[in-house]
Image 1 (cartoon, one colour):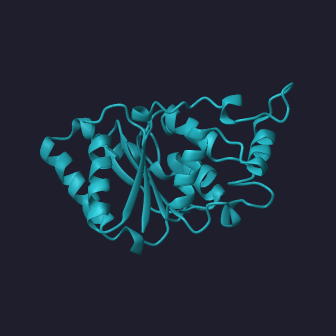
Image 2 (spheres, one colour):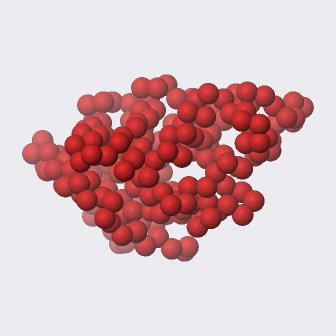
Length: 222
């Protein structure tokens, strides 16, 4: 199978970096093809503007969705956007590896979505949810948090982690057609011992060895 792994962390020696490398090694050892996008290492530009395109339909007033439709029809996406689009279109499974920041993904990853999940080629004109452009593909969020797991329970300080992740699961991934798998979460790695962090990596490795046999997560609309 074909797997795309997106890393959104600036420090290669971080827990996110370790999980990213573990995923690459494990999946390749299992015989899967792996492509990656290490967004900080690539110096990926998260700002969405006219530079997303090789040409502009309306020079006097920039409307991104209109320009995305035009670029879809004319093969007019900038090279960095086109490259990422082709990676997502290629994969059977996409994994996002990131630290939870402000109850969401880091800005560089949100900017990647803003630029790569384009109208016309990915969604729009009836292509949403089950009919989205990425239908038939799976997606998995692998993330770390600052706090411990008890903070992310329904009665915890931050509330239910599933509710926190729902805008990503439902609004970004399911909206564009992905089937969502259960997230892989390492709670508070900075507070764990080296042995505990290593055990988290072992559990991640074991899960990845059978990842394509997993059933979808229950996300729901509300």
